[in-house]
Amino acid sequence: MQEIKELLAGLRGAPTVLAKLVEGISAERLHAWRGKGFWTIAQHVAHLAEVQPMLMERLERMIREDCPKFVPFFPDEDTQAAPKPELVVADALDIFRRERSRQLALLDGLDDAAWGREAEHPEYERYGLRILVRHMLMHEYWHMYRIEELWLTKDEYLTQLEG
Image (cartoon, rainbow, N blue to C red; front, top):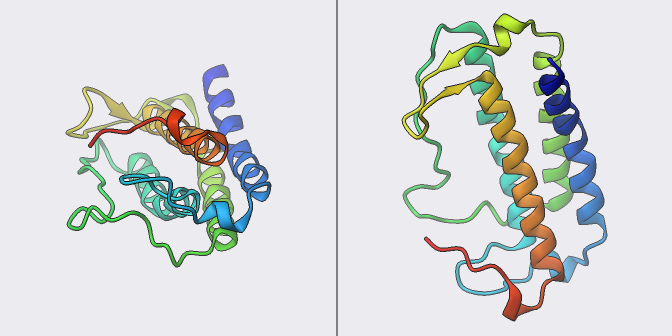
């Protein structure tokens, strides 16, 4: 259960970490395009907000269904478009914070049996509630790392992401 406590602490802290990171970035830099294939910082923040309802739905299904089956989530798959540019950063941060509160209300107090619930997902060898929660945390901190990189790193040192 120590791992669960640590995962929940990480999820609990993510909205504050993200908000404090973004508050130090100028509006110009939030919306700056750093190159072909790069999202803006604002788009990374919008993406983190936009995926939260889907994650909540998965959490709820894992708790109430026996071995639910999921399909991969590819936002805007048809167009390969980045997140909605019209989502204002402050609004995205509010959505992220609100959705995280809902998720934590669901997860807080679950017993060992619930944390052991399994699911099927074609992308993964194993999938379940504990894996999804860990995945959520790592996904968010990866985007926060990318935000910091886009904000502070000189062009010639930016990580080039393939495909």
